[in-house]
Image 1 (tube, chains in turn purple, brown):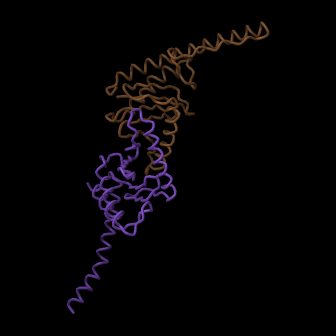
Image 2 (cartoon, chains in turn brown, purple):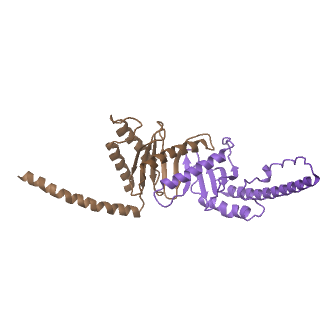
Image 3 (cartoon, rainbow over the protein chains, first blue to last red):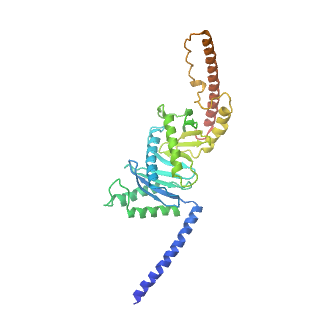
Amino acid sequence: MMSLRSAADTEFCAPVAKQQQQQQRPKTTAASTTTTMGIYSVYVINKAGSLLFSGDYAPIPSMDANSRLRLAGLLHGLTTFAGKLSPVDDQSGIEEIEGDGFRLERFQPLSGMQFVVLCDTQQGPLKPFLRKCHRLYADFVLKNPFYSIDMPIRCELFDTHLKAAVEEINRS
Amino acid sequence: MIYNFYLYNRQGVCLYQKDLKRGSKQQRSDTDKLLYGLLYSLKKFAEKISPNDKKRFRSYKTATYKLHCFETPTGLKFVMCTDLSVGNIDRDLEHIFAHIYVPHVVRNPLAELHVPMTPTTTMQPLPSSSSSSGKEEEASDAVTATQLQEQQVQAAAAASGFDAALSAFLSSLKYY
């Protein structure tokens, strides 16, 4: 009887806790819009320039899937171009694009995969974060037996771990 | 270290180009056109991907060099390639526009605005006029030829004024 009651209690309590969380959530996002936001979104592009994964982690106007794909392809083209136009011998691609309202960092390991992060201008260097993304990709995407290579990434573990990594940066 | 400097007008014509590379590789001749294409696409890319109202593209960085771009509201593009140690140089590019380009080119009635600048050192000689039938025609041809030549010389003088002022400014920069 006792155990039943406690279960009922927790059941009863759970919605309240959820409500509290929901109440708290908008507050934090409102606070973060007024201050700096850190990471806006993360993209994973394969070596041929097609978009495998994209995630938004800040309240920014969302883009439709088609323009995301197009931008990923465009970035891939731009980066090879920038390498070709290098005034010095080494022809490596774009690592960082700076604009007035955003900063974009790109990391390309030897496999050719591209990890791209879009953040605000105040954010410090994100190379370690991009390396972490690469590690998460290796751990939770490539080791997933149901994932076939060069296909869009739909792996829950990758999503959750990436989200945790982004939140860790956005909190600090 | 500054590798090179480019100036484009609104139509994408390279008005001026200066290579300051010391010990870097020889570049192909159509680099300026390719670079304009890259800048145009980057501008569009920045407009699309920026999550807020500030959509201007400012610079990009590769493992070996950094490219800075400053665009005026009239569409002039001031572009500079430097090494990686250089920070934000918008102010310097703006200075080149406001205190070198405007006084030496825009306010100079002898300078030609929308054609590539050729300082006197790199000017091409005029092709000799071909023989014509009438004496009068020949005379008028000669007149236009001398006028043309004069114009060209004046424009070249204006261009070398700009060139000299720019070189002086660039060599005064900390990261030259």
